[in-house]
Length: 72
Image (cartoon, rainbow, N blue to C red; front, side):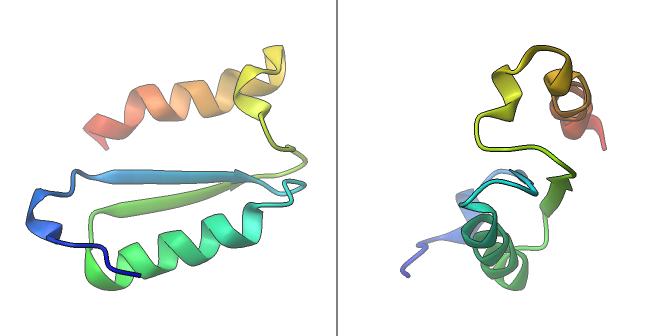
């Protein structure tokens, strides 16, 4: 995968739900970015499925994390 110039990549927050069928791909992507660019955080939300950011009360923790991320 050609990721180009990492000097222009902003800090990155990669998330996945533990029940998401794409969780493994998210982890692989985050690990690749972490090897080449240190400003990457990865978090898995236990019990969450794909699209969990829009599932009402299930989205409170992830939404809070996204809001806090730029300052972390």
